[in-house]
Image (cartoon, rainbow over the protein chains, first blue to last red):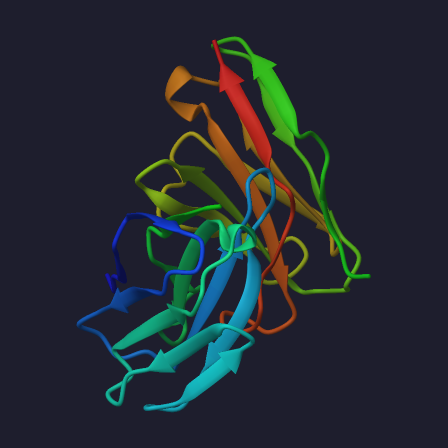
Length: 110
Length: 113
C-alpha cells in the first residue's frame, strides 16, 4: 500500500507569517494534487503537479513536486485568516484511486 | 456550476438501523467515490464505481454496501448501523478514472447512538 505522510499534522500561526507543509512518500507518483477543505465543506482542488521539479504558484501559495516525484511541499507566504483549513495532498499511483495523506490542519490567527 | 449533492448534511440514527446516504452529481462523470473522514485518520476510501452497475471495494468496505443504478447517483448503505460508523461521509466524482480532479460534496455527518 502506498502511503503519503503529511507534516505537520497541526499548525497554528499568526497572520503574516510564512509556513510550509510537507507531503512525503517512499513511492513514486505520476502526479500529486493538493486540496483545501474549509469547515463544513468538502475538499476543493488547489493544484495538480505532474512533472518532477515542477513549481506552481497560486497567489501566495507555492507548490513544488520533488525531482523524484516522491514528495511535495506547499509554502504559504504572509498567511491570512482565510487560509485556515485542512490541507490534503493526494497522489496518483497508477491504476488505483488517489492516495490521500491525513492532512495538515492550519489555523491562522488574526 | 458543477455540483455534487449529498442528500443529508446531518443524520442521527440508532444502532441497528439501516442508513442510506445519497449522492448525485450533475457533471456526467463515470467515476464516483465514497469516503469517510475521521480526525487523525484522514480520508479513507469505502467504495468506488467506474460505471453504472459497477462497484469496487476500497480500503474499508466492511459494514457498508453501495448502489449505482444510474450514472449520476451513487448511494452508500449501512445495513445495520453501529456506533463506530459515526463519522463524516464524503462523496466525490471525477471524469478521469483515478487521476482527475475530484469534486466533493459537502459531506454528511452521521451520528449513530
